[in-house]
Image 1 (cartoon, one colour):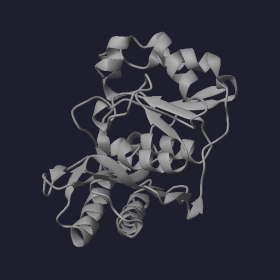
Image 2 (cartoon, helix red, strand yellow; image 1 turned 45 degrees about the horizontal axis):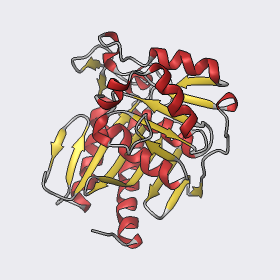
Image 3 (spheres, rainbow, N blue to C red; image 1 turned 90 degrees about the vertical axis):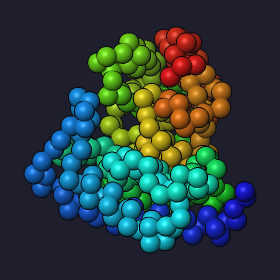
Length: 275
C-alpha cells in the first residue's frame, strides 16, 4: 500500500511528539539514577529512565494510533501483531552511556509499514538534536535539511561501529574488523548508540557505519533518516539489507563498495550469510 506524503507527515509528527516527550523524561533522570539493572546479559542494562521513557512513548502511540502494532525494547510486542503498521521503539538507545553520564544517547522511534521502515525520529536530549525523516519527505536535523558527506576514499574517512552484548562469547565479535579499518582510515569511533551513529552519518559528521548483533528498534528510525539524507544501506556484502538480520553496512554511498570489500577481508562469508 502506497502512502501519501500527507499520511507519512502525520505519522512523522506523532513520532516527533513521542520522542520529545520521552526525551524530556530521559533528561530529567540525568545524574539521578537510583538503580541500574542487567537484563540477563552482561552489560545489557536497563534503568528507570528507559522504563519511564518507554511508557511516555506508548502513551502517545496509543492515543493517536491504538490500532497499530508496537515492538518496544523493554515491553516487547504489543498491540495488533497483524497490523501492517509496526512501531519499533528504543526508549533510551545508549543506556550504558547514560548510566555513566556519558553521551551520546537518544530516543529512537521508527515506523515500519508492511515490514519496510518508512518514518524515523531520533532525539538526543543531551545535545538537543532532533533528527527526522519519512520516505520522500527528506531528512532534517532540528528542522533543517541534512545530507551525507562527500568523502570518497577510506583513507580520508571517519567511521563508526559498535560491539554486541555477546562479544565475549562469539568469535564474530567485530574486533578484527575494527582493527583492520582503523589502519585504513582517519579513525573508527565507537559511540555506544546505533541510532545516533546512523544520524551522524546522515548529517555528514561520519562517513560510514557497520555493526552486527542489532535489534529492529536500534535501526528502524536511523535507516529512514540516512536513506532520505542520500546514504546507502545494505548487508555487509552489498546485497539488500534486512532489518531482521541484525547486521548493517551504512555509508554516504561513495565509500560503500570499498568498505564492503574491506569487511570481506576479515569477515568470513559464512558469517555474512548467517548473522
